[in-house]
Length: 306
Image (cartoon, rainbow, N blue to C red; front, side, top):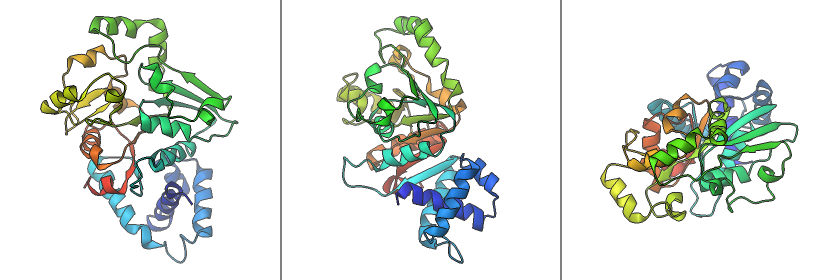
């Protein structure tokens, strides 16, 4: 059984049998259908998570999750085992399963760019009976058709998937060009869809040489050193913030063709997929800024968030 599923089963069983919540209350708190809650409660019995009491070997994990949720005012957090394999996809797989559990008949998913989101999309396995619309949160078409995604994946082949990709670069040469592009009909039409998203999936960028912005040639390590000296710890949608989540005032922010990160606060179910200690400060800043509703991360990071 996958770690994400096991975590969700324990979470539901805990709320139902220990906290005494009704199935409807659990459905609402975890943003799941009532039928999904019933299914997972049955699995809890089948898998011996429930005996005469809940198997408490996951108690420490639940306590850690609750502390993080309370400290950062999160709706939820899912913690997967830390992998020492840099190519492991445990976080994107967990994120894909999280999304799959929350797909309804018609669902709009807004998506950020970067490797974590790309791999998450590549792992999606959604029934063809559902219509799913994907909307990009920014320009940079290449980010939304990355080689990291297996072209045989559902993301490309499912006939019920609709894609709306902002037809522009991510970063242009002046704020005047950016301002005009943002008002172009084909760009504005897509960005205007974002507030209607049911789920938003983003990555969290750290200031190191593995960052997507460096890999794609938008910035170099010298640029990052300057950003760090001005207090930057990470970025969401290429907009940089400090350890308290305050957006920093950089000229290039006004040259981006992107949803402003303050908009994330008004969207429902913003899911961030990010792990590795190198991203700890970036994750903390994003949490403190209130941009995220659900965090999917690894044990090592989770333990360092308290």
